[in-house]
Image 1: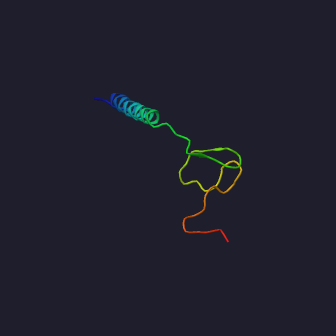
Image 2: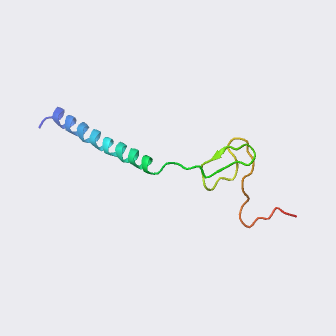
Length: 72
C-alpha cells in the first residue's frame, strides 16, 4: 500500500465519521425543539432559557436571586 492509497482511505474514513456526526446532530435537533419558556413582561420578547436574569432586548430584570428580598 503506497502513500496515496493510505491518504485516500483516511480521507474516506474521516468523511464517514463527519457524516455520522452530522446526522446524529440533525436527529438530536429534530427530536428536541426549543420551546419558548416565557416572555418578557415589558417588551414581550421570547425568553428561551431557564436561568435568564435579564431580557436580551430591553434589559429589564426578569427574576431576582433566591434569598434576596427587595421588598421594604
